[in-house]
Length: 371
Image (tube, rainbow, N blue to C red; front, side):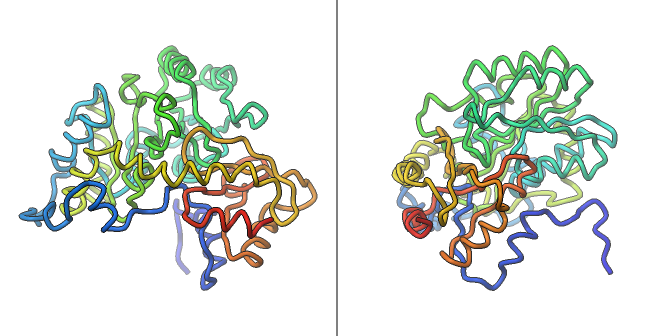
């Protein structure tokens, strides 16, 4: 028998594994349909062969190649310098390293829910005291800052947010972010912002400043896989002004990937210079699919309700029927339509519903299949 210690299997993995061997089309993904190599080369105007010509196949610097960190600093942040950025093998590693550098057992952590499970489970498995503040579905998944302040008064060390939000597609207003940062400053709370869907705002004015740019104890985590639809390039990053935290995070990273692939970092350093072109392509998929969301009033006859998102390409579809479990409905959809969606139990929330992604090229087919 094997012991998981502090790594019990995540509920998402357990649920997905139960369909292993079935030929299902995933309609729960949170990124737009991934670029193909040919499409990406056409979008950026050069070939992978030219990008990788002469690439160093030795170890990359632990903190990431300077060229990539300069690209991120120049094109994705306003006040973050290259030496305040660190790269990782995806955003999950960045989150794991930040939690383990910043927290110890007994620390109080606050997260918003519905929530991407690892944002809650990693500190929980470390022995932290994790509390949840539920977003208000009746008010477009709004965040109640008065409730947040009550937790801060009780001695919160870290507040974890995720905007654009997974799984609801909600966001904050610019004023709400300013008010939140002021609240964190007032109570001396670290603010960890999972910003992996930044770049998927449906209009430019809805894009928020990064938390790392906005607050001296703010930590921003990004990734190329979600907001830019290139999951085959395994590059994530962390941005933070605090030098001591960056050193501590790098120490944790030394127990994991140590450094990224030189090939991935070289491609990412060039691709991420063109965020507007990537966004334009992604919105060309997202926005037409979003127009179909108003047609989604039921799933196999079960009535549902939707708050149309302004950001991202996933939405939380609320189930109106209290007499049936969301898991049962999700399994019925898989069996009868061949599409897989995720029930709300996987997102640590009391709200009943499903996460549905609308970044897939077959989204209209999914809508028709569920009528």
